[in-house]
Length: 292
Image 1 (cartoon, rainbow, N blue to C red):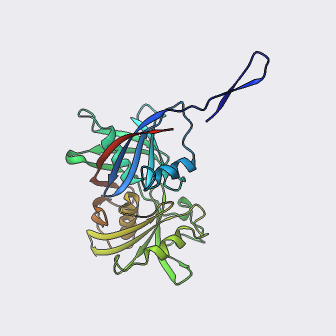
Image 2 (cartoon, helix red, strand yellow):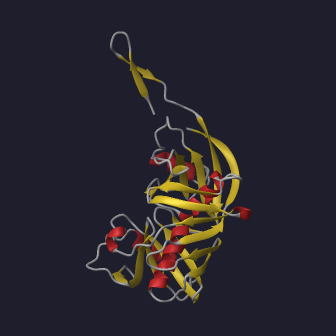
Image 3 (cartoon, helix red, strand yellow):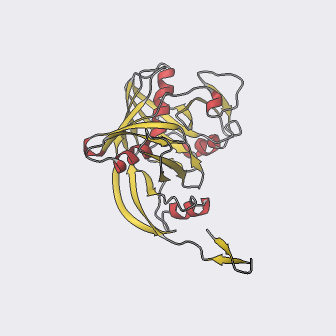
C-alpha cells in the first residue's frame, strides 16, 4: 500500500510502502483450518493475491480460510469478522471458523457473546475442553437466498451435469449449499461432481456441495466440497445445511451427529421458526508473525 504527500513546490513526494509485522494464530475445527488475525485498522484488507500466498501449504501459512477480526459496528457485539477463502474470495459465513473465533476471543468471565458476520449477528457459547456452540440462524430454503436460478421452490432439484443428472436439496446458512444424498460417502464422486456443481451457471455466486449419507434419524456421514477451497476435512455450515435439508426431506430428527472426515459435530434444530445451533471442538495449533 503506497501513499504520497505534496512537497513545498506542490509536487507529489512518494512515501515508502507501509510495512509491519502482524501476529496471527493458526486454528482448526475438525481439520478445517484457519489463519486468525486481529486486522490493524490502519491497513487495507489483504489482496486476493496475498491471501492465496498465505494460504499456500508449502510456501505460506496454509489454511482453508483467513479470519479477519475487526471492530464491531454495534455495541451488542464483541467483535466482527470477515471470512476470506484460500482462493482470495470472500465468504459470508463459516461455522467452524465462528467456533474457532469464539474460543479465541473468550475469557474466563466472558464465555457467551455475539459476533458480527456478513451473514448477520452470531451468538456463541464456549464450553469446557475448547468446545464451542454457535447460533447459525434459521436455514433458508428459498432459491433466491443462495442464489439459485430455478423456476420455483421445491424439496428437490435436478441438474444435468457432464456425466450424469444430479438430484439435490438447497439451503442457505448465510452462505449457499447444495446437498446430495448418497449411499456411501466413501464412494461418492466428490472430486467430480463437487467442482462442476460449485461452478454451475444456475448458481451465479457458486455453491458449497455436500454429500450426505444417512445412518439413522440422528446420525449422518458427510463430505463437503467447499466453494473457493475444494474438499475440506470439515465444514460447519455444510453440516448445518445437510441436517436442515435432511429434516426437510423427513429423514432426520432434531438433534443429529454429523460425522465428517475430521471428526464429529452436533447439530440441533427444532425446525421452521427456530434457530439452528452447532456444537463441536476447536483447537489452537500455533502462533506466529508475518510481514505485511
